[in-house]
Length: 152
Image (tube, rainbow, N blue to C red):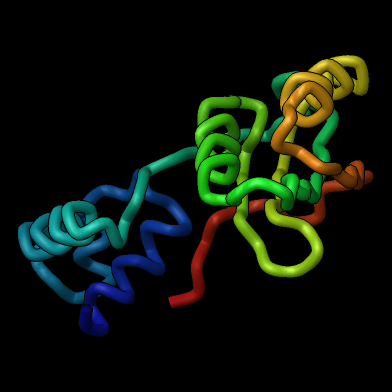
């Protein structure tokens, strides 16, 4: 990656719908060169996805929870961890899932319509899950910043 790629990444992280011509003008390359670079950045996995950040509140998902999950320690962890990861990936309410160091094993960002929906979700994901030793929930009072922009 060179400075052109980094500049392109800065631009598309702010607005991935900008026309190639506009990006090319900003980075001083031809539109075809920008297209080739974008294609390579996507093919190599540097650009993982082109997404829109949706306001949870605007679509009725007013509750956001940050949850720290600890798995059982008695069993070998590789099986339960992989199973837990698959469960998190397949659960649409889990917006983000991080395998962490420290006291817990995972930190999750979860969205729900209300506390009742969150309670049902916690029963399914944590309480009825034999691999889960415990979980701690913090409810978000106000979203201050949301995004996936990486400094480049």
